[in-house]
Length: 52
Image (cartoon, rainbow, N blue to C red; front, side, top):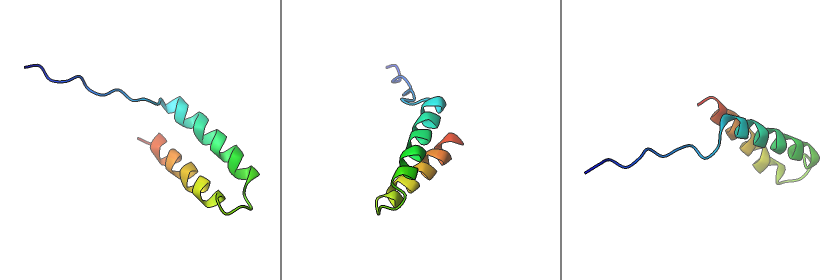
């Protein structure tokens, strides 16, 4: 029986950089609103994902 194929990444490193840049732009636009904390956390998680 053959082994299943290895899963491929859905997003590239370049995709993470683009998404992180977009989140930062949006974060600056909503910085005085309560949901900005969630976007700030997302921004930092995306940054840590780039190091993988």
